[in-house]
Length: 134
Image (cartoon, rainbow, N blue to C red):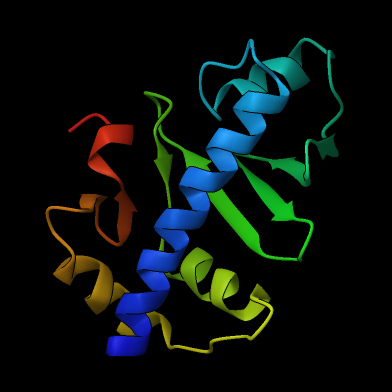
């Protein structure tokens, strides 16, 4: 459980770093969700580079990969909040320079144990409270 808990915390830190780097590279961006708007308006493509990250917009979210290969994949809730599930947490762990392989069930338990740092917005989906509507 300690590995799972640490991995969830690493993901939260990586999400913050991704947000800061992307918004620094695109100063007009209010939040990560706005990448979708830029794609819809064709100001940027569905995939590309922004700062030191590559990105790929998918259905309800976006996958960001840092220059060291670390993935941060989030979906966006209706209010624009970045939300994630154990599958995304696990893939984050597997993408680390020194991969961490933790089961999705352990990650679900770890994320639930991290209240109030995380809010479970619907069963199995989480966000960081300052970044989501609760």
